[in-house]
Length: 294
Image 1 (tube, rainbow, N blue to C red):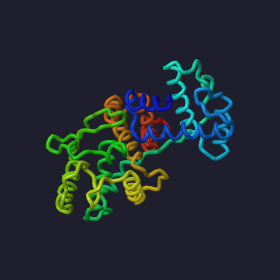
Image 2: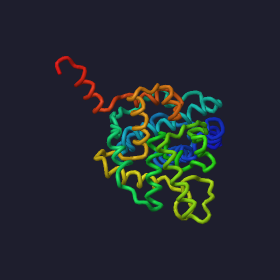
Image 3: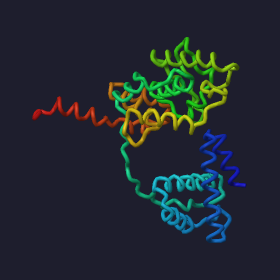
Image 4: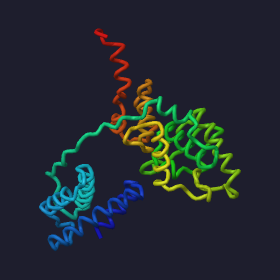
């Protein structure tokens, strides 16, 4: 019963997305099954820390990254904190637990040169898919939207006349993103082609395939990855890296970090500060111009 109450709490009070809810359920069920199998223990409310430690060891031995393991333990911590809050337990078994050390990987954003080379080059066909993918890449880079925000973008939320996009982000938080000229032109081009090619072009979602079906996240991810591969050798070529590039380039060009925070839909400034690192090209340029020995 407490597990169902916890899920209700995440949905109704924390406004977690459906994907997050599924991930939480899965992690809790996997841990519960592990306790049942290894210790013949089925009541999560009376979980001992030794059970959790044993699970962590098994996850490490399975080859799972420390970051993924820490995320799973974070789910358990949230669950036990909820039980503590409603008086089901007296102490969180994870109160003294220290997360596993994570290797910090600095993700280098795409350069402005790489982005311009892709968007201004002859990489996109003039057919429906070519126009679709160019519009998607232009949108990711011009707005910093998340992948799920793009695939869930409603037709009614795109206002080309007033040049703004209404976005429903994490935890159902709404924000308004301005539309710059290149993006406006590309969105208009896609919209016109969609009306021309798809007989029943009216759809709840702005981005659809030729069958007028909502785009799946994995489909968009693969499309973006394939096209970014044409201009960059970076290992990470995802929609999120276009979001990363959007934020980094704004900050590099003098944008206020609080404004960037609002555009990205971050709840706290700490989340935005990961983008304040300057690209290596920028560092080299500043160093070359400013160091007295140069």
